[in-house]
Length: 281
Image (tube, rainbow, N blue to C red; front, side, top):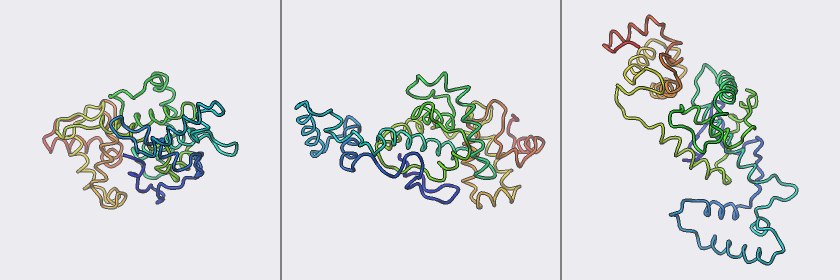
C-alpha cells in the first residue's frame, strides 16, 4: 500500500505536488533516494548491483577520514535545503492525517475538518500520553485512532490542530515520493491487517454492542428512506455502507453511527430492528 492508493479528495484534487511544509523540492537526488529505498526494504529482498556498488564506493571514501558518512553518501542537505528526513517525516504525518480525514463523515468537507481538529485535540490529551512510547498502536484502538497514532508517531509535538491547516493538508495531500513511502507502506500494512474481520452477522463492531446484522438493517432503512442521503453519496449504496462501517468502528457501547441517526429516530431504529427480527441494541 502507498499514498498512490488515494485517488482524489473532496476538493477534487489529486494527491500530487503538495504545497505543505514538505515542499516539492526534494532534498535527496533521485538516484540516492533509490539506493536508500533499496537498503531499507525487506530483508529477503536482494540488493540491486548498483546500490551495492554505491555503498562500497561511499565507505571507501568515508574511511579516508575527510568527510562524514552522510556527506559521502549524499545524505547531508546543503545550506539551502531542508533536511530530507524532516521533509519525509512531515509527508508521512500528513498522509496519516488524510487517512484520518477519510474515516470521518459529515455533511461537508469543512465539517469533517472541524471534526478532525477536535479529535486530534482529544487524542493528544486523552490517548497520546499513554501511547507515545509504543512502536505500534494497540490492536483494540479504532482505525481512526490508529491513523492518529501514526500521525503523532511520525511528528511528535507537530501535529496541527487548526481546521484551516488541516484543510490545506487534505487539499494538498503528500505525494508517494521520498523515503516516507517506505514507512507508510510498513505502517499501513500493519494498520489494515488489524482491521480485518469475519463477515458474520453476529460480529460486533469496534467497542460497541452493535453487530454487522444491526448495521445492515439500519443502513438499509436509512438509505431507502432518505433521497438526500442517496444524493449525497451519488446513488452509491456501497460507499454509504463502507462509511457506516468506518464510523461504527469508532462508536462506544450503545452508540449508533451518526450516518444512521441523522436519518432515523430512536423509534424508527427500534422499529426497523424489530420488524427485521433482529435483537434490539
